[in-house]
Each structure stands twice: as structure tokens, then as C-alpha cells.
Image (cartoon, rainbow, N blue to C red; front, side, top):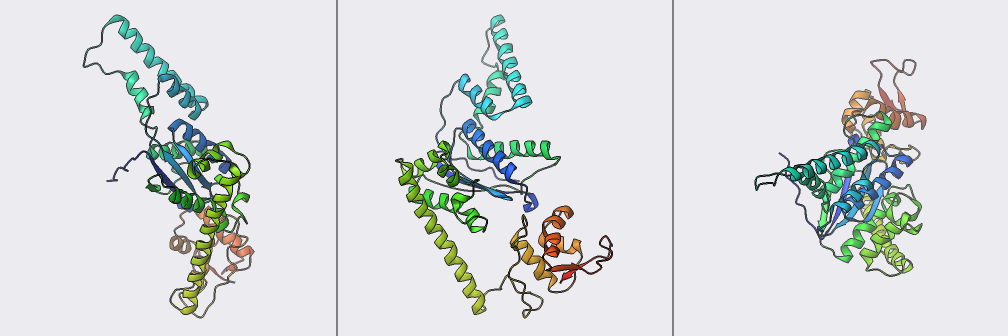
Amino acid sequence: MRKNRVVEQNRCHHLVSRFVHRAFFLDDEEKDRAVALMRRVEEFSGVVVLAYAFMSNHFHIFIYVPSAEEIGEGEILRRIRVLYRDASLSQVVATWNRLKTEEQELFKRARPTKKYVSRFEAYKSSFLRRMWNSAEFMRTFKQHFTMSFNGRREHSGTMFEGRYHERNHPVERPTMWRTSAYIDINAWEAGIAERPEDYRWCSFAAAAQGDRKARVGYAFMYGGGEWRVIRECHEQSMQEAMGEVLKAREAEKEECRAGRGASPFRSKADPRLDIPDKVGIGLGKGSERTARRILELLAGGPMSPSELREAVGIKSRIHFSRYYMTPLMEKGLVERTDPENPMSPRQEYKLA
């Protein structure tokens, strides 16, 4: 049985989730939708988004959860209208009005006893329980995104890989600076942006373009002031984070050169056989690490598509073919053992 997450307020929460099969579900349009939905959930939940980064196969959201507030029916309804859309909004508002009217009519006819349970109050409380709560923030975001994506893209089932990962800590500025810097350099670290501000689906790029809500998050972390000053401080935080990444990479290379670590470019089947070091460049949406692993496996001899999928943990044949085998063959790194019969049940792949 899963343990319930400990919900804590007046703390910062770094939330991370991957898409199922680590598939690259988020194209540019879906990233735009994800950012917009995140802002709607933020306003509904009463939290503050400090930083975020939406990548193609995972995302980071860094939030501050304040103490719960006393809010009236008008404010609850306003937040509901921010979060819900179209038919879902109509259904929620209709249920709200029906239960409230039923209760008002009941009170006109009789005085409630101590045993009376208000269905309207229970319904209203079901929304209040989802506010000022990091776990409910993520649940609401993931549910709404999944329903929206599945309805538009003819997809079915869950979109996310297990439970999300969370780290929380008190409101400490140095910790907030490091966490937000790590999030904002995700695209740079992945090699898809030369500078964090070039990747528009992260909070720093949004703030640099003048997004008011994004700047509110940085003002919270850096104690307010002009954006110019805040930006300089955060750029320094990102430079420090980049330095740590580069230092870790150099240490890894040193271990490989010294023979203390296994090179990701070398075959486990034959240590003398080098795997091409350009794998992943130009593969589009495929994971560089997975592509390297495929080549590493094929260095030991031909393998069938099902054997390769099982070895790298990909269940979808379409995803595996579209994002890995087809690009690898186009780059001349992999070829079929029976190129004349590509649909042969005995088809295997080998290094070219």
C-alpha cells in the first residue's frame, strides 16, 4: 500500500514527474498548454510557482505552499472558474447551484438538527481540500493535463510514470536559488539551448520576456527589488549550477580515462570496440542515453526489435521505431539483417 505524502505548508516543494515509457509527449504546442494549465492550477490552489521547466519527456515545477486561508464562497467559485473549462465548468457550477438551492429550500421548511450533514458544505469542502497542498497541486495538474491530452490526441490511459518525485525544504534563500537555477538550466544541460533564456518553456525565459507571474516567483526567492538586479543574481546562481555540471562531467571523463568507470561509448560485450561518440546528435526527440545503450547492445551482435525494446525498457513498438531505430538507420549507424524484407518476423538489427 502506498504511503500518503506528508503535506506541509509554509515550505518550498520541488516537484518532478516523467511521462510514461519516458516518451516524448510534449511538442511545442503541448508545452505551451502545460505552462498555461500550470498557471491555472497555481491560482486555483493558492500556491506560488517559483520556477519551472517543461521538457519533452518530463517536467520540473518549484512551488511555495503558504498557510491555508479563510475564503468565502465567492472566492472558491472564482478559483473554480479559473481552473475548469467548458463542459466541466458547467457541470461543476450546476452541481454547486443545485446543492445550494436544495439546502436553502430545506432550511425554509425545517430547522437542521445536530445530525444534519450538509451536502453543499461537503461539496464546497472537496475544493478547499485541494488548495494550499503540494500533493493536490500535482494531482490536479496531472489529471487535467491527461484528460486534455487524451481528448485531443486520441491517446488513452495514464501519461505519467508512477508517482512524482518531491523534495521540500523551509523557505531558505540559498536553497531556493540553487533549486531554481538547476531547473532553469535543464535545457542547457540537455544541449538543446545555448542559454537558459533561449528555452521559452522555463521560468527564467518567461521572466526575461517580461512575464509578470514568472517575475513574481523570482522576486519571492530574491527578496524583491528591480528585475534587473534579480536577473543578475539569478544568472550568477545559474552560472554556479552550470559550473557544477561541467565539473561533474569532467570528473566522469577522468574516471573513464583512468579505467575506474565504464565508458558509455564502449561495448560491454567487447571492451575494445568503441561506440560512435556522435550518437544522439540529430536524433530529434529520442533520448541520447537510450540510443547509446542500443548501440552498446548491438555491439555484442544482432538483436531482434523485441529484445532491444525489453533491454532498454520501451514497450511501444511505434515509439521505439520512430524515435530510435529509424533515426539510427538514417544516420548510418544501424542496419537490418534482412533489408529486403523489413517486415520479416525474423528481422534483427546490427551495427552498420
